[in-house]
Length: 172
Image (cartoon, rainbow, N blue to C red; front, side, top):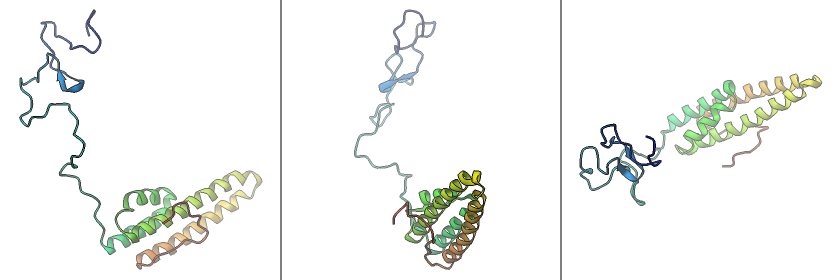
């Protein structure tokens, strides 16, 4: 912007011609599209879609997975929870919950269980000052490994599994 020019106004080159930039509302500096015309389909550049129009042609709603894929992802969710605690079940729940009832249920129960275990780890960390926290952390780790393996086996066999000691944060 040069001295004495209004803020938001079209900027000019040193030769006095518009610079060709687009401003809000689809207007270009100098009032015209750089090519001299508006787009051929009757729309203006920079406008927004009218309400009621459909998604672009590339959008597709999530498709249900095959039973084999659901078993695989449910198994991977339980195994991932053993190594990465709450992270893998959370991502799996957010991404896969609309892909099938079996995988939705397994990701939900895994997420609930690993949130419960995260609370146990936190409580163990707080009570480690008293000397008993290390036992709480060790017990939570053993429970997480054992129940995670049992849940992964059940998921791989196509069975539903409910973790014992799990608090229901996410309901079915």
